[in-house]
Figure (tube, rainbow, N blue to C red):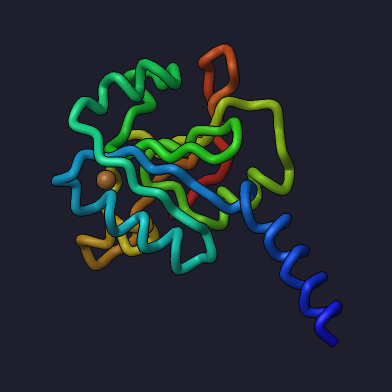
Length: 144
Ligand SMILES: [Cu+2]
């Protein structure tokens, strides 16, 4: 029995550690960023919040163009997750493991279907984009 529990512990450790951990850079005063972090935690991600006053330096570091920029920047594995991307899309990204730089929801669309931006009582029409390594982007998923 003891042996069995040890194996279980090992399996959950080795699966959980890297694949689930998102480091999120955000301004310490950003409320919607914190709500997005809660959304990730509610959906099983482990989150490290990193408070950063100079968010521009983070966008530069990860080569996130002005037009794709939002408030926070999450990093998971080799991918960036820019803005209010739903957890389900991050899961899908990790499963499909495409050769892209990351996902982005540019700006800050407000609506009940935008995690962390449920500030108005109606759905938003918005796109989650995937950003290729050359900086170009295309629609990953459309929400309305
Ligand atoms: Cu935001």
